[in-house]
Length: 634
Image 1: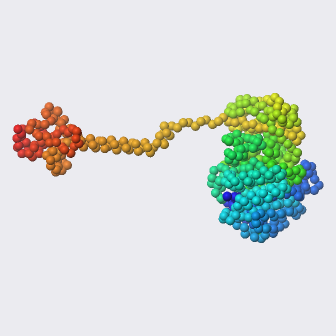
Image 2 (image 1 turned 60 degrees about the vertical axis):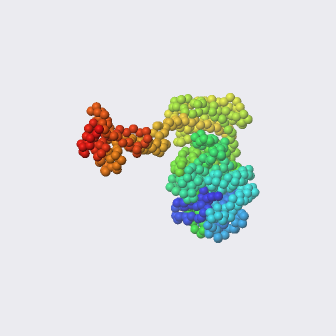
Image 3 (image 1 turned 180 degrees about the vertical axis):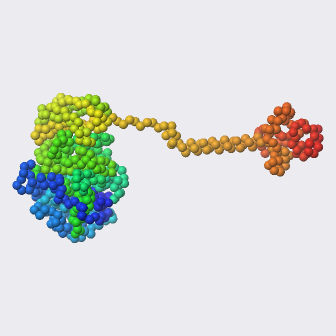
């Protein structure tokens, strides 16, 4: 099992994994958690009560937050220094409860020497969760590090730590700042999924870091983007709030942190029903099959500061984002006097309403700039920062007592609509739905999720459950041709909201052209070249054989003697025979005695050259006497 811590908290050049600690850079530019209480609306939430001004801050005293890791615990003196120097003196101090599992050592000064990196992770989790939820109780649950050399805990120890969190039964939120590539250890993931189900049934909201791999979960440690797209578990669990990372170091609007994990889950983890709404619907429509999308929300992850091993240090990772969000969940639960368990089914339809209607204040601040290895941030939901960073006060107010009902939205046609064409919209309330929405004013929004432009708004009346659908239509503008468009219906009756989304898809891409003759031949280059070479050699050998067969022997060879030299060979038979035919003479003169060439293959035909049998002189034709030795022929 490879379970890097954080995602993992690391410095700007490398992610801290369970293999060992990473030495952080100087803290001069690090961001402490205090300012984010204001940026993310926590201060406003603490100073309000059910949306009304309060005479005293409403601190979440008594809310229980769990942070789960492994290692040698934490050094209490580090926490004491942090809450003395980097935490408002007017805030109530958190109550930190150590929960060592399976023989893990108790907290102490040895935590600074923990080579697994777990103590460093646990310390920053405590500091950042408590900073968002002043006065809360933080349960530091940790297993012993493993002995495999990686520092990661054993499966059994991690399971035991999670089992303990389930048995506690009182946690408002639980932060898991670690993960592994989804599907790496299926037996462990199965056990963890069961525990997460039990936690949510207890009312615990489980949050997990989306990872520090830039959307490339299979990357090698400290080498983000070195593998293909993928997501981490437990962030990929449908019951977990997956928290991505932002970069707030510029002082301006936050951008996506370039190493924030995110993307689509594997095909075995289908998209939950609550995620098939709002801007995320376009991502699901473009996938086959549609699977769980990560992350859900985001918070600061780049160059954040904490106190560890007797010094203020800074690091980066979605390890910061997850405990920060756990603290905010505790704040909202305290303000609303409730615990939610699985929070995503409430977040998504609420965010879809605001995406469709626009306006402010909104429960989330969309992160529109930046990217990770594979995906870009965009208005609304995206695969790097989810819905964006929280506005805690607004989110708490809208979660308080709000319930959602599903509307069914049907488009005709629903794909490949050209500019100027009319699209019909049908909205129905499923049989058995809440009748409280019937007859209420309903808005249908045509939304381009890539730039937040509200293209069309249709107004109608919500039908009754199981009744005839409401029908409307819109004309597709040219700016939305050949792209995904969300059509979202929204209706409200007090705290009851009805939400439904459908997607207008672009035409499917044209089929790629068939292979050309050169493409086809390209795969046969070696066989073709080999064939041409064999043909060439075959014809060459046949030509050599033919030349050997037709060549005329020299007079000495015909006489049974060895040739004296190459130049002693006689002329080619063709030349002699041709001359003879031209003169009308016989190819053999009278008295010339041909001698068979026994070196030739049997059955071959050879034209003999006439010669003097005594001296071997080649004769020109029908001579009666040899011009060289005077021999007469009878």
